[in-house]
Image (tube, rainbow, N blue to C red; front, side, top):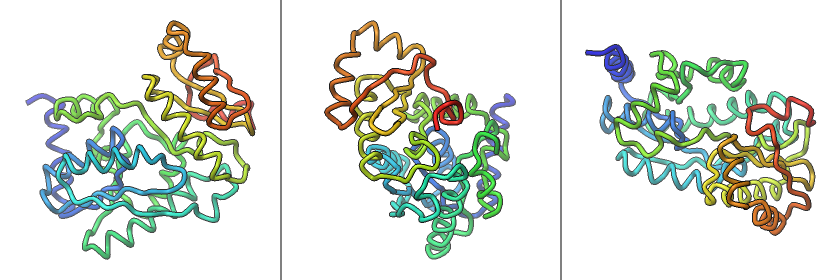
Length: 267
C-alpha cells in the first residue's frame, strides 16, 4: 500500500468515525471530492447542503445539483439572503459571512438528524488566505481533508481516479471578491459579474475573475488564457459583449489572475 493509499483510507476512517455528516457543498474540487468520500464511507448517512445566495452564480448551483445526483446523495439547496453585516462588503466579510451561513447550515443539519457539518477546507488553506476559517473553528465545523493532510494536488489526483469531472476544475470564489471593500452591494453588479464570467468561461477561459470598479470591468485570468485571448483575437468580441451586459469600460489586467488583488492598489 502506498502512502497516498494510506492517506485515503485514513480519510475514510475519519469520516466513518463521525457516524453521519452534512457536507457544506459548493460543487467545487474540494467539496465534491469530500462528498464522494463521505458517500463511500457512510452510504446514505450523508446530506449535501448547497447555499444559494445573490453572490453565488446560478450555474454553480446547477452544477452542484447535477454532481450530487451523480454521487447519489441527498441534496438540498439552502436559500440565504445577503446578511446585513456584509451589505457594505467589509474587509472581514469572509468571517462574517461564514459565521452567518454555517450557523444556518448547522441548524438545518440538526433538524434533519445530522450530527456534524463538515467542509472542504484542505491542508494548504490558511487563515491568512481564508479568513472564514476562524468562523469554522469557532462553530466546530470539521474539515476532514485538512485534518488528514490532503493537499490540493492530492484532491485533484484522487478526484481523477474516482472519475469526478471536477478533478481539473479551476478554483472559484463567491462574487463578493470581485468588488472593492467597503462598497455597498448592488444586486445589479452581482448579476453583471455573473453574466460576464459565464460568457468568458463558455469561451474556454475557465480560470477568470471580472473585478468591478464602478462602471469598469477588469478581467483577470492566467497567462495561458491571456495568450488565448490575444491569439484568437477575442478582445473585440469580449469588449462588445461585456458592454452589452452593462459595463462602460472593459480592461484586461496584464498581471493576470491572483487572489486578493483588491488588497493591492484598488480600493
